[in-house]
Length: 411
Image (cartoon, rainbow, N blue to C red; front, side, top):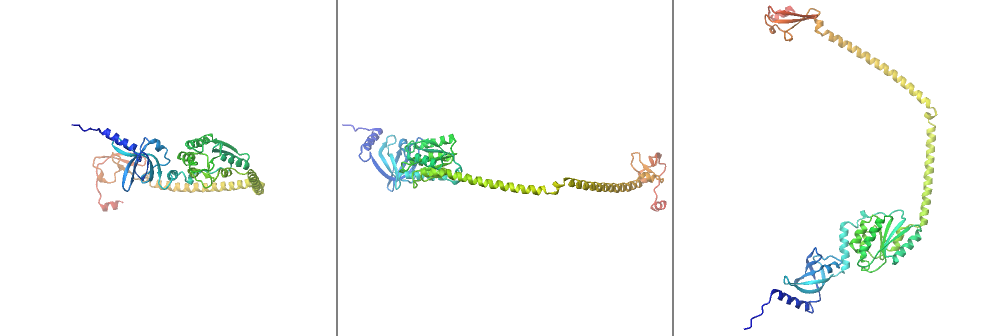
C-alpha cells in the first residue's frame, strides 16, 4: 500500500508562492481601488489595504519604492497600483507588493503639490505677516540659479543695464533632477552665511512640472522661509506657480522681471538724489529764516535790552517783601506774647499756692493722698498739713462731722 505524501506548512506556502509569482497575470498587474488602514512604518515601508465594493487585498510598498513616491498616501484615496501578487510564507497571507502608485483623476506630482501646499499653508509659511520687506536701496544681489542657463544671463544683463554699480554674486546650483532641491537649500544657506547680499533672486527658466519640481520640494520651501535675507522667486514663466513662489517674500513672473524688481535705474536714482538735495536745501533755508526771526524777536525783548532794569525791579520787590514779612512776624510774636501772658495769669490764679497765701492749707495722709473728708481720718492718726511755705506734721486729737446746715453756716 502506497502511503500518501505528507507536506509541511512551509512546503505548501512555498508552492503557492511559486504559482503566484510564475502566473502571467499575478506577476505584473495594475490594480485600482481605495486605500484603507494605511500605516507608514518607522523603517520607511508602507502597509495598507486596497479595497472596492466587492473585496479587499493586503498591500505593502517597501522603503526603496516608497522613498521615490512624491506624495504621501492617505486613507480614502483612489489609486492605481502597479506590482505583483505573492505570498508571505510566515503568515500564509497573500498580498500585493506595490512598486508604483498613481492617484486616480490627478497626476502624482499634482497631488503631491496640492498636498504640500495645504500643509505649509496651515503652518503659516505663506502668511503675509512673515514676508520681509524689500530694501529701498539694493547694492548687492545674490542670484541662486544654474550658472549655464539663460536665466542667469538675463538677470545679469538687465540688472547691469538698469544700474551699472549693482554687485551680483552668483551661487551656482542644480535646478533640475533628484539632487536639485538639496542643492538649492544649500545655496540659500550659503547666501545667508555670506551675509553681504541685500536681496536673493531664486530662479530658473521655464519647463514642465517635472522640470520645475525641485522648487516644489518641502526642504526648499523651509530654506526660503528660514532665510534672513528677502527672497524674490523667479521660476519658469508667468503662468508657472511653485511652492517656492508662495513662500518667497516677492514673486516675479520671470527671471528678467526679478532683475527689474531688484534694481532701480541709475538715472532715476540720480534724479531722486537731486530731488532730495533740493528738498533738503529748502528745509535748511526755511529753518534758517525761522531762526533769524526768532533771534530778532528775542533780541528786541526788554530783558536783553535793559538787563539791569529787571534786576533792580526784582531787588525792590524783594525789599518790600522782606519788610512785609518782618511786620507780619512781629505782629505774630506780639499776639503770641499776649496769649502767653493771659494763660500765665490764669495758671497762677488756679495754683494751690495762691490759695494758700490767703490762709488755706492742704491736708495729706501719710501716703500723700489728699484729705477731703473727715471720714478719711481716724482719731490719733498722723497727718501732714501743706502750707504755702512748708509742711506741718500733726496728730488728730478729735474729729467731728458737721451737719449740712452747719456746713453752710461755716462757709
